Image (tube, rainbow, N blue to C red; front, side, top):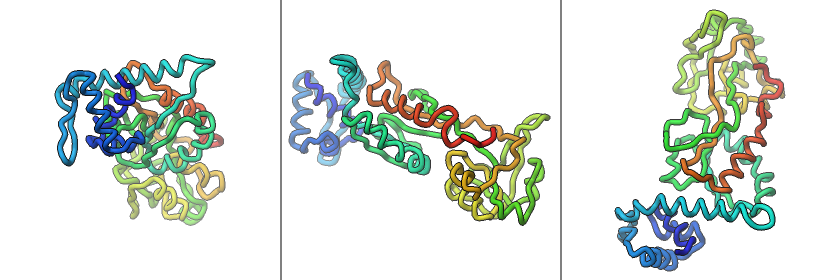
Length: 301
């Protein structure tokens, strides 16, 4: 059984298109079709239904898919564990990440990552939509949202701390709130879906329903509006740290931390084995971001 035929079959299961699956692996459509046919001959079973527009897995194909994925993981792990020292992870690592976090904290780290693993190729999708890893054929996702799918495994890369911010211009004009209750008398910039902020106080959690004339669905836009003096905002430290360092934003209400357990996660499909390229990603970025992450240095807890 040819390993490359298995790789093509696994990609085909995600793309439902022989030409696209073959293209991702550097194969022409006729060669890709021939490889699938040879795999079916080797197994003595029909694995896919072919139509002019797309292909779908047969019942036998669906039954064989998890075994094919396990074989590939076993082969990749075996290759990485033999020879003179461990072989470098290789192949294409498909990554998805939130747009803002990916642009600010993923892309700048890739130079060092690829210097360590020059045999890897990266296929990256930056989107704020939660994509299906298996359906999209992704190896790993970076997320800062709660894990919903129990078939996935999550590894924490960094704490995602949120703090209250305002610009010096705003504080000079409207004054600095010293208690969460005072936010009710201030202009607040709201993130879509978050109508209130919950603070830890000596009397327990305190939820403040904020008011303001700006609501926006992008964290970078919330930060920028806050830096422009349009109101007080809750910002993730990873998105605001440079503005804080330059003095364009000021942390406020330091004595009343937000009740928040958000984190930056690396999420990948559940399996007995973790592919070497995924393991390399997990280890590198957990170390790269640090504990605490580099964007939290100098920011009060």
